[in-house]
Image 1 (cartoon, rainbow, N blue to C red):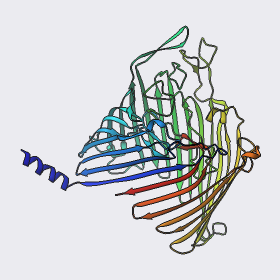
Image 2: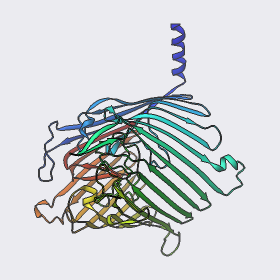
Image 3: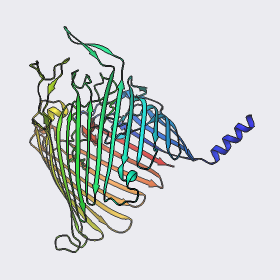
Image 4: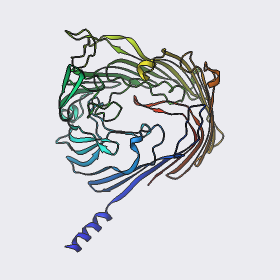
Length: 543
């Protein structure tokens, strides 16, 4: 028996493949009270992780080791420690895929279920349990899952259960491809269970919080030629929680997107309404953790530092959002387009509150233990949360020289988005980015960014120069200057020097300088980054 087991193990390993990746981020800190960078007891903080994946035919298994000793500033201190918070095993054949352990999953656009990891935000809401994917016929995909969610080194108290079905009608009924219109329909059901609790919302108000909270969603995608239309509607039963001040009101969200594309032109228009759609596996959770669902921010995700200084974070308690974008390419060889053509992108987004009225029999909106409020479905509220208009022009002038210029105007509601009683920020931002390539290996990139506002900390200027010697080296010099701060004693420079070395799948990056305090967001989920002064080291490797 022992020999047979050894032989089986050898055969199993011989046919398999091992792959993975590693990343280490370390920061050495210096106190700098002028910019608000305070003493760090450990002097050096570190985040690291390694993924290992084994695959052999229809079988896959993997794990992730993480170490936070101690977590880099800006990450939640509850990550402190080392361990293996993520592991899984899965098996699949032509129809089934079964996974046990930890996993990520998304139904539709994620409005009632999405688990994912965003390392730059220190966010991970992976499930631990089991999921099954079943495809009984062409064009039909059925999914089911059950699990609890990661909460740092533990699991959240709620159990999440979900079913999803997606049906590509053309693959089911038109296998010969005669119909030019393609239609895909889908539907989801998700419920969470957390033990019933009693909570006092006041001296005479005892709330009985429901143990089971159900949600559902329906979606459709229609494409024909150059046109496409996507839509999803989600609903959630009453779910009293810390986020909504423990009101008993159903929630819903509607997301619509239409697009048109042809050679040289692309148009996208989107709209979203969200009302009381915070959905967590622990009702008293106050942070951004243990989210079951994901509500995408209907705004452009800016890549440049000053254009991303005032990012928008999705407001689950209520928002009305609109966004439109036009991409146009001026033809090559034309007078305006030049030899290589010119790309123009215009984007506009606007997010406001929803209109709220006191619930029947109540004089106050959002009172704990009540139905909360009424809200007409298509009515915009009076309060502006965020507005962004931007235009970007890119042009390649010669084979070695290209440039980008951009203008952005933003309105940013500090009170709603950051919780501070400050005036609405009105910001004008200008960006110029040019790159000159000396030869096939050497290039110089120059950036100029300027933000002009009379609110908050006033005007900012950023300049950057980056020299690349491909494929191994790059060197960067950059500086941000808060020259418009109304307090002259706070008009600080934030200089940074950095370098990077790449060898195959290994990359080492090092930077030294100052980092201003601010907020970074990815996909409408944000975290605060404290001011810092010191050395940063990042090592990545893939095998």
